Image (cartoon, protein in one colour):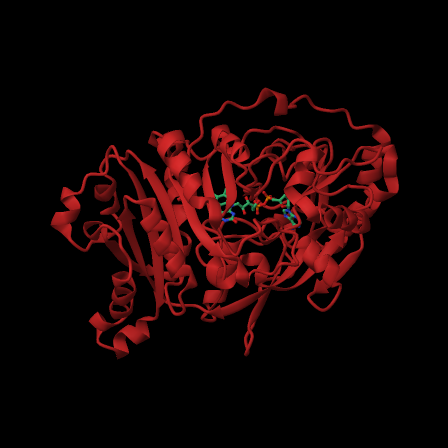
Length: 503
Ligand code: FAD
């Protein structure tokens, strides 16, 4: 769903620096002389100068392609050693799916985490199964591997071609987060190279301050080189359901009902459509209507509609051992009977678990074929407190978004009571809050600011330290103190522009 948002903003010229920088010969030879298992490249920096957002173009001086943790530690130590005689900073780069230059290191060193292939994906079965993976591993590879053992990570992002280090530096939120918390809640242990070049293992019990700093820490405290991710049993299939509402209150009431329910759905999300023509007809390619005639008579154009998207996991064995029509239909029908959607808009399908989880990749392939994947993506992600969601929705959906130019807009609640409060992630100060994503719209931010709706940006982007301080609020001091402890020269993740390397 996220990937269907082609942006139209031109590349911001003030964020583009394309002129090659002459690398002082002593710095180059200092980096060149490093004893590495991988290699360092001073050419081909073009790809590492941009990200998915495609709004910033800031070339690094060099790219490290590490083969081992020691390569990363060696590089960081050398930059620490050069100290203020160089401007060098370091950005770990997963797949560069950031939006506003967060994975870039202008005139610095980008570490291509994908080339760190150790450890291999290693699955540990048992009572509390887990998988050990490299920080540069992508989630789709982890899913494919764990499924061979009937296991799977529990919490996801909507798009799986992201890396472990990249999503754990943010949070990793999707429709399972109400149940299991975000991905940062499902990590047992990490191996980190700090901003001093030390290699440290950390968990809830060992070096816990570092562990919680790094989770949701925007790459500020260390580079994740290995992660141990908790696993659970993987279902074979999912029942995937969409229903529409014309009334936001009914929609959000049902969403909140579902995320607080025991034994309810396994995934709860939602999106908004504004004045879409033939919405239900378009669904027919992948979903079947419950009431075919009613669905064909339903008109979506000219309306603002709220789509609840829900999923129930099930196993094919259970379908076979119980009469097919009773499971999972019986369970989902009972859950659906508690909701107040427009009856003729009920659509559903049954697909393998992996096909459901990897759904955005299908959209990616289509968009790539049309040249619409690598366009600017000025997306805005907000976490909105439940107490303000009605006021927010009324203004944004009735007055600000009057056409569908913004593409699909995600909106769904998560239940923070299950989330770990010790991580670096900043959320609104309420138990339930909504994740909201749309094409960047300054008017939305202006409205929140004018009405004092205490939103927090997810995948945050600010230009000044004053704005960062306000984002962190009373947790700023802790964040800054942790930075001083683990990365005192402010070498790491310069693309967020939170701290400046002392020169
Ligand atoms: P990068 O963009 O390469 O890096 C992100 C940040 O993490 C940078 O600051 C980088 O320096 C740092 N970093 C990268 N690797 C490491 C490492 N090993 N150690 C320490 N720091 C590191 N997010 C969600 O939560 N939910 C979603 O449903 C979701 N859907 C998405 C759909 C699409 C199509 C896209 C493009 C993004 C989506 N995201 C979603 C956002 C995603 O979580 C971020 O883009 C995130 O940055 C992961 O991308 P990446 O792995 O390419 O990391």
